[in-house]
Image 1 (cartoon, rainbow, N blue to C red):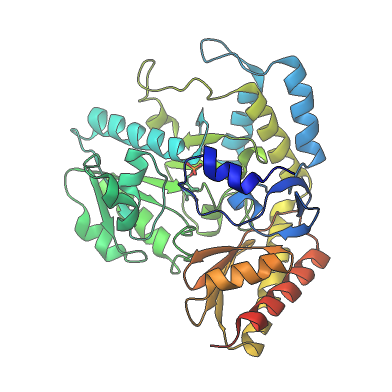
Image 2 (cartoon, helix red, strand yellow; image 1 turned 90 degrees about the vertical axis):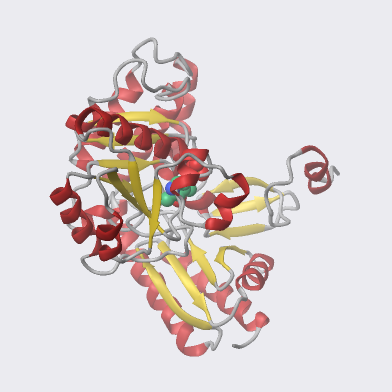
Length: 397
Ligand SMILES: *Cc1c(COP(=O)(O)O)cnc(C)c1O
């Protein structure tokens, strides 16, 4: 049998710390490794597989579209991108969509859009305020906006024009604003930073400040979007109306895609020649996107994310009562983290995997759960039992 782990070490860049499993098949919430062992997948391709693995709606859309038209280019019109854009504008209340292929590309496009808008309407303002512990991607612009120094420093110098302020501190946003400021860029809930919720009213206060000072409010919903937190966009629970929203991850049910959604008065500042990407709006990805979004809407999976999230949170909180290693549970919908009393997240992740549950150690002391929106109650209960057994194996506080 091929030793895939040895072959990977021989042939791929060694820029990932992978878990020692070779996944070969998936169905719903479950994946199987090359040795035939099955796992409940509560990582979900990092918030990508919102409908689980190989959902029939996505498979069928891909099958049909791949036999019709896989790729053309933005020199021409194609239909799936228009259908998906229409859905996203209706869902967001915003006006226009730009498609790309990943989250970081959506953030890059939003940065360029903000700078173009700032040049046209704000006397050349270009600076973007974002939050410490925020995550916006790995390309140079998105990395410059990312609020984790450890990710940025090895790649300096980065593009100028980015300022980081503490999360949940609207006064810091105000204090960082100058005549150069063009936008505030935030995740509605910080994902990679450890599932950090916004303080009540924080985003509304930031929005009010943006309106007062004529700044764009850009929300990075790459992880929180697509129904995960209980509404299609997380901002819908915060009573705010952003000018620009970035989407990616779960939008096409596992197929690479990214999108920027914006108000017309902002979007219109990007004109032919300003920005583009070969694969953006690709018919295959957009057909998968249409199928995914329609399925979420038709099966009310946002409500399911809320209900499943409540069930999971309650079960995890009861672990907190029974297990000294569990120090708290936080999150919204199916974007949750278990806070540990010490830096044991890697051990818990390993112990859970050995028992048939995939979770992600998002911080040294926090484990993140991102199950599909299609997860069943039985799967939630099974995951909690496995997690408890993993906690028992790792030991107390
Ligand atoms: C994952 C993520 C990104 C980056 O997306 P990629 O597709 O990995 O480039 C950006 N912002 C947030 C909030 C994310 O969770």
